[in-house]
Length: 230
Ligand SMILES: [Zn+2]
Image 1: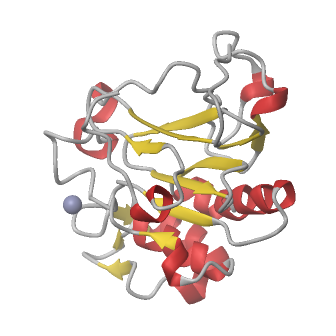
Image 2: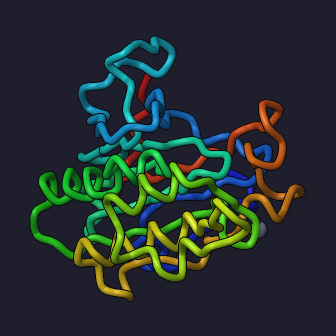
């Protein structure tokens, strides 16, 4: 593994293997990815088909793993990656949340699934690079979809811009959603919350590069010896 992965201290201090990707990094062998559809379904890696098979049973925007040595991941190009873990490393979840996923409640679904698997509490979550308010303009339907779910969380992360538009800080909103789920500030990692649109040399961005954009890969693993899947 190269040295360019972005790592967050909230996971690092617990020995949770993880990385937020920058351009050109491939996830470690054995990382299982869902087929992302901007919804709120959580896929359990233990019941997933191998990554090469595809298919509707792998359509999900959060992927949960438990048991020793499992790695799961998601890909992004402006949407928010969230990597969360039980403090003992026995269960992890990787969440992909763009504005559609946020409006659908994918972060809540992913954290709830992690809590079900590891009910003793104390989970930690790190928020990764995504489109932020410096660059990311959205129109009224997006603002309305987010307001329908998160009205009280939006001041400061959804800011009025030119007429009919707002600037949206996806990472900032994700961190607020995590706080709303009961994670205290010291259990929410914010050190990798870079803006993907600002930094073409480091990050892929769909907003900046359109269909030509590649994808950033992000992963998190349970503790214990690695089991290569798929
Ligand atoms: Zn920016």
